[in-house]
Image (cartoon, rainbow, N blue to C red; front, side):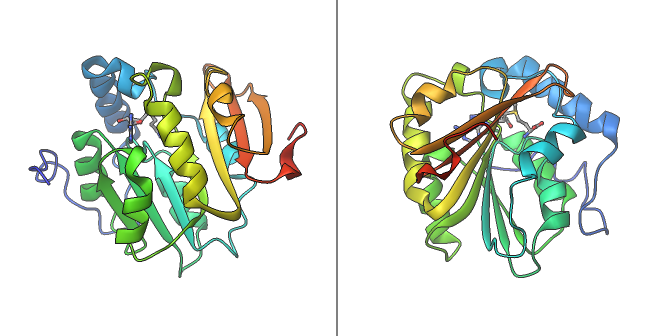
Amino acid sequence: MASLPFKDKHKKSSRRAGSGSFLTQWRIFFRQFLKHPGMIGSVIPSSRTLVDAVLAPVDWERARLIVEYGPGVGTFTRPILERMHPDATLIAIDLNLDFVAWLDAQIDDPRLRVVHGSAVDVRRFIREAGHQQADYVLSGLPFSTLPDGVGASICAETRAALRPGGEFLIYQYSRYVLRLLTPLFGGISERLEWRNIPPCRVIRATGDQALTRAA
Ligand SMILES: C[S@@+](CC[C@H](N)C(=O)[O-])C[C@H]1O[C@@H](n2cnc3c(N)ncnc32)[C@H](O)[C@@H]1O
């Protein structure tokens, strides 16, 4: 892996899940948005209300492998670690090396593996972590602005990476991703979370039919 530019500037907190200051996180996020608008897809990190809404379906007692795509400054990563079983693993995959370095420097938790790479390679990252399939995959990727074909590949790889009954949990400002999910997932539900700026779609997809209704 290439050098980690934030590593020395943002030393690991002694707490299990250090936060960095709220403003620091916003500043880093905004700066990355200016550098890579299509890859980041949002000007500010997600709200706590959205985090709670997206994570609500997770069975924390049973989940042993959770994968997060596009953790950014860790807006979901920290709440996942707070709720996750002591024996569970979280793999957080981000294409942006500055975010990877920030997370690696800020969060000190043996259950977390921060990986620099693309979500397209999720199955390889799962294998490298010593697992076979994930219970949940959570995505903050901006599907509508990813390069052509990348979103479709990520959805197909995610379907293959999930164990039977596993769920793909997505938060998204546009409905674009639904056309990628429909051919792959038998059960899809969608609702709008108004208490986020801007309001955000919360989507659940599973291989079976169980979710084919409003969440
Ligand atoms: C909208 S931000 C989400 C940030 C954070 N999860 C939140 O809710 O505030 C999108 C993130 O996806 C990452 N990303 C974009 N394309 C990716 C890919 N192909 N694989 C993994 N991460 C990717 C970006 O670097 C960025 O961190």
